[in-house]
Length: 151
Image 1 (cartoon, rainbow, N blue to C red):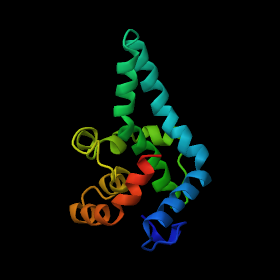
Image 2 (image 1 turned 120 degrees about the vertical axis):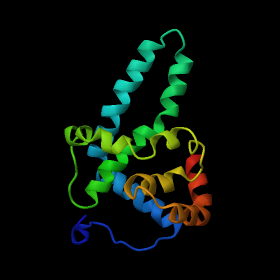
Image 3 (image 1 turned 30 degrees about the vertical axis):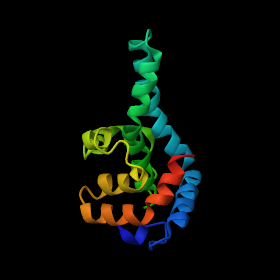
């Protein structure tokens, strides 16, 4: 990580300002962000619907349940784009094991209904382990995260 190349002002932010920054980053890198997300989302959803054609409600439920996995690919793109290296779809899919591996089982089971998941996913994935930081951030910002999850 080269901190001199970071494209965002690194400082503590109030929860709503951090959400605004997230929207600005998503708009800035929307092409790469949505391309990487859809490159994994569309094949999985098509496969689920093909395999469960007689139970489409189950296919839709499984696609929803796997959303934390899909979010990891979008987070990977943003985490690289912040440092000036917007990865393409091919580059993102090439590191799928690195993206999917840290804490995926916990994200799909134990932490699936955590209202602050959008806050703690970057910590789980990018920092690999920081229980104290997750707890501190979740306590301060859980209200803002829960409000965004309901939208």
